[in-house]
Length: 344
Ligand code: AQP
Image (cartoon, rainbow, N blue to C red; front, side, top):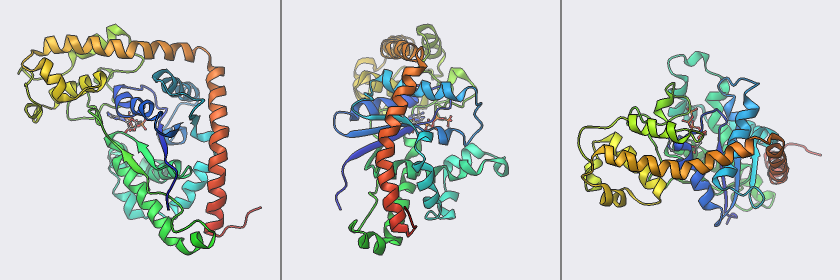
């Protein structure tokens, strides 16, 4: 069956939106708007899989919504909303909890990393995170999901859930007139030069909101001085930059900074090395600072402007939620029929 092409993706409101979230996800969301209908979600149900301070959470939800819009997402042409306003996400996630297998979830590396050694004390939500993510995507029967490299495994699980649902309920799907498959197998869109932006302090570790060191990341709200300082202090090695991409192979910090430059400038690593091959890091870092400030400062300014009017952000989220609910409601009606629930 041919499914209507639709993009879905989400960002967690867990504070400290950073350059990795921007280059790996939000910037790509913006680029896809002209080619697809898009649904972009502030995934607050995911955020509470680890403790969130109730007085801070509304601000962080609005901050992610503001970032979406400040980066260029058009909430009128597309849908921007927060997940907890559309109950169908949680409802479908329960059905998927009964479709997904424990063995699948046990393989998820993000749970292992986030739960760490204190696994027994992790929330059940953190463990079940991937089935909620599958529901987020499939409740809209979305076909394309732009994400950073770190979400690849979760996307594969979403495809497995869709496939198993289609198989397990195949007869019922056909009986209800939905053809051979009710859910599409969503495709990850993981492309570009910055699918995995690394920490500025350690080129082998992902740039992350939850890293204790603020020096490890460039936040979307950092001012020019903070960006300059962080780039200046970013870890490097003693060699000048190579003139060809293969020279970056065993140099994670150099590779990361060149990748960031390429993604910000809209070029490739090879393109950057054409200009900066054999340059010292001091020269390259000065150019990177200038470029990052040029690209990020207008976003930070627009985020501040939008966040000064929380009621306006709430109105955008309410409007997006209403439109999302209409689509999600139709999917849930069909799912209930397919599963065999009695409904009004
Ligand atoms: N370092 C990164 N490089 C490229 N893409 C990244 N993403 C996250 N970090 C990087 C992508 O950003 C989107 C939103 O991520 P998220 O908010 O759902 O949470 P996450 O993947 O768990 O990201 P963080 O920032 O590292 O948060 P914490 O510290 O809480 O784990 C996703 O598409 C993600 O791939």
